[in-house]
Image (tube, rainbow, N blue to C red; front, side, top):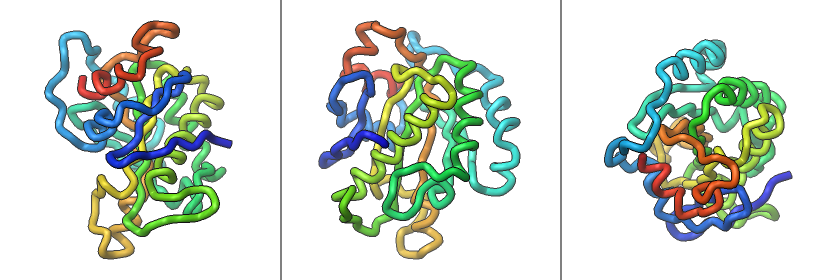
Length: 214
């Protein structure tokens, strides 16, 4: 169903074109560190992308299952974990598949790189599939990538995969409500354009840190 990415001490990020998950520093930058600024080589996000996303996800935004925001790194689409996945699992639920397809349909009209980043609450996990929240959060990102690739024909070179486990919370893990907020998947439309298929940047995972910082 999906490939399992092994998380390490500071996080995991993988470029899914055959390269191994080596850019540890990239996920630390992607999980919330401020950007150092947009380089002259990066392409600004088209001004109508956010409008397109809001129009497509209007019902989900009003229902509170999706939130859209803008950060220095790009547009962040945050999805409610409990709608997307069963506890301790990484298979995308049927109820959430249409939402991911909507996002993929909009993004197929643009060429920006896409970071998929999974997050969990602080409750430890250890089951037959995942040894830790690192593995669970990353596997969920991969499952979303596979769905969007399959249903919206987004090419793999556009994706960066990240898992932050419980290390990038947006609420307190001391309450159930806060933990629910922390269990999420974020789709980040980065300002940097995706590399062309077969390019040196597409084939070399060291390009990931540079792509996220732009």
